[in-house]
Amino acid sequence: MIKIENSSRAHKSFSKLITVIATVLVVMGIVLGIWFYFFNRNHEETNDAQVDQYVTPILTRITGYVQEVRYNENQFVYQGDTLIVLDNREYKSHLNSALAEVENAKANVNVIEKNVATTSNAILVRRSQLEAAKSKVWQTKLEYNRYQSLLKQEATTNQQVEKVKADYQSAQAQYQEISNTIQSATLNTTEASAKIPTAQTVITAKQATADNAALFLSYTVITAPYDGWVGKKMIQPGQLLKEGQVLVSIVSKEKWITANFKETQIQYLSMGQEVTLKADAISGRKFIGTIESISPASGARFSLLPPDNATGNFIKIEQRIPVRIRLQGPADQTAFLRAGMNVIVVAEHQ
Image (tube, rainbow, N blue to C red; front, side, top):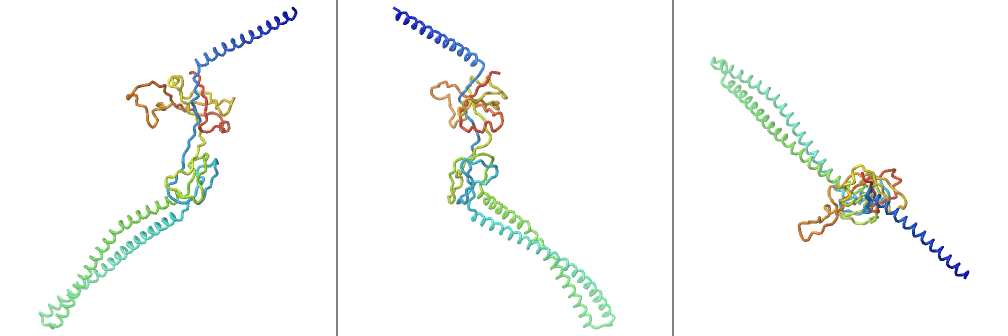
C-alpha cells in the first residue's frame, strides 16, 4: 500500500513538472511569436545580400615573353606597383628605329632651311652686283653718247666709237645676266621654302610613330591600376603571353554590401537610412551600414537575356531590387569581410 502511494505521488510530481515545462514553452512560444510579429511589422530583412568589391582583370596589351613576375599570390599591392615585366628588346629596337627616323627627318628640315638661307644670301649678293652693273651701264651709256657726239664733230675715230659701244652692250648684257640670276635664285628660294612645311609634316608623322613605339614599350611593364589584393598567380617567367590575355585579377580595398530586397520591401527603404548587417562568417557580430543607392531597375533587367513577358505564358515572379549599402566604421573592423560573403541585412521602417 505504501509503495502504491509513493508511486502515485511520484507520478503526480512528474505530471506537474511536465505541465510546468509545457506551460513555460507555450508562454515562450507566444512571447516569441508576438515579438516576431511586431519585429517583422517594423523591420525589413533579407538574406539575399553579399559583400561586394571591384574585381578587375589585368590584361596584357601586347604579345611577349614574361621576364619577371613581381608579386605573390594574395599579396596587397599599391597603385603603380609593377606586377609583371615582359621582354622589351623587340619593342626597344622599334623605338630606337623610330627615333632615328625622327632625327633623320629633322636633319632633312635643317638642310632645307640652310638651303633657303644660302639662296637668300646669294640673292642679296646678286642684288648688290646688280646695282654695280646698273651703274656701269649708266656710265658706259654716257661714254657711248659722248663718243657719238665726238664722231659727228670728227674728233674721234669709228674704231674708238665701236669699242665704247661694245663696252656699253657688254654692261647691258652683264646687267641682264645678274637680273636673270636673281630671278632664278628667288624661284629656288620659294621652292625650297615650300618644302619646309612638308618636311615638318614628315617630322610630325615620324614623331607619332616614335610615340606609338614608346607606348608599346611601356606596355612591357604591367602595373597595378589601384590599391588592392592580387588573386591567383597564373603567370610564370618565360611564359608567352598573347595580346588580351588575362594575367591576374585585383580586388579593390573598397567594400560595400549589395542587398537584393523584394520589390514589396523597397517602399520602406530610403537613401541615407541606417541598416544592421550580420555576416555569416562572423557569428554574433553586427555591422552598421548606410543605404547609398537603390537600383533604378530590377536585377533581371540587367541580365544578359532580360525577361520578355509579352511572349509565351506569363508566370508572375516577385522581383528583387539591388540596394547598395556603404559600410560604416574603421576599415580594420571590416577587414575580415571578403567579396562574395553572405550577409543578412535588417532595415527598420522609416
